[in-house]
Length: 283
Image (cartoon, rainbow, N blue to C red; front, top):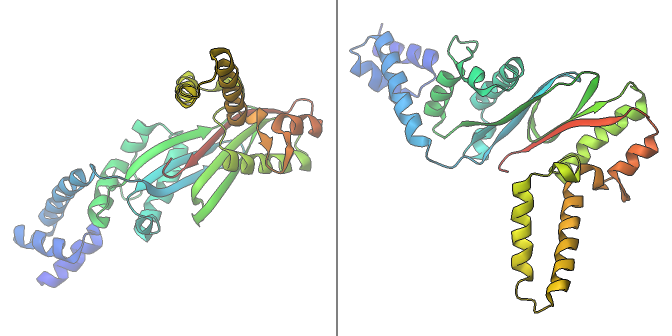
């Protein structure tokens, strides 16, 4: 077998570039298996060097159905790579693995993909091949008894891959058309309004403290009396909590009403918003 044929075979089996394959064949004295091992080791080295860089692009992948839905973020450095066929193929398979592993990152990383290599090993290989930092970001699997999941994908890259995705889980015995329409609309509302929690009490205390600090800083040099400053601060914090809790947000389709008002108007007695998860690349 000529060196050119060996390089072609090595490229097919590893996905590495022509120049890297040629160098590996020379270093391995024509032994293809040894050359593949050399590429693997060099790939790990290349990948580790790239991990210090920023990776704020990528895609969100969603898999599953109305009873169990999984969502995972995969980051890269540029939007160009986010549309790369090798990257998309990797993320699509990873999305199904995320579903099987129920978003357990440790299980995902050690899970064997179709090529018999683990997710971690494939991640190293694709970083080496594409030449960008690629990381697994946030993930979640939404599955609740007696609940129906709705999803919404915004800025779709391909099939189940997008730049922003929402999964919302509704609990109800009612599966009427108005229930399903509301579920779809609610997922769109969450995508647009980005609530931090279902209700006011659910907002993280650290987030509340940070906002209080920002409000205090804003009002510090106004020259207003302390009692007035306290009233203004209280008003601003109440507004912040309402704007960031789903039930108190203005309904995107009818802004004069709140989400909780729409829930009442539907007149579905046992309807509850059980859970939701919104994921956007770069946030």
